[in-house]
Amino acid sequence: VQLQASGGGLVQPGGSLRVSCTVSGRTFGANVMSWYRQAPGKQREWVARIISNGAADYPESVKGRFSISRDSGKNIFYLQMNNLKPEDTATYYCKFSARGTDYWGQGTLVTVSS
Image 1: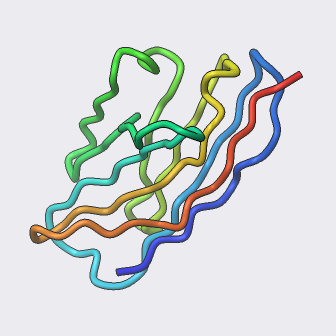
Image 2: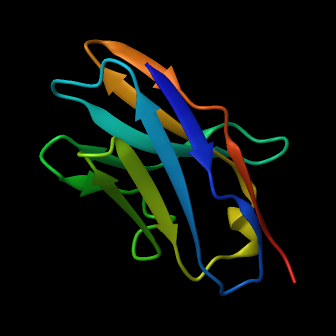
């Protein structure tokens, strides 16, 4: 399984951005698609996940601002980020979990700054 993240960039505070993750390989069966982020000097933190049945979950820090979705037919999942804040600046990583194994993408940088 391979993951390719894309869509990062520079956005002003209060703006929106959508990042994508394309999954290829053995993706059949029950799985969980997740997004994490890591800011400079900080630990990687979880920001969203969606399971095979479409149920999604978020930490309080992004709930109401971030939304995860998936296009199962195309094996792509997205993270829509609204009302972005400077503290959302980080490299965003996608993760695909299936059959007891986690697969990570390479990360895409999101910078929130005026």
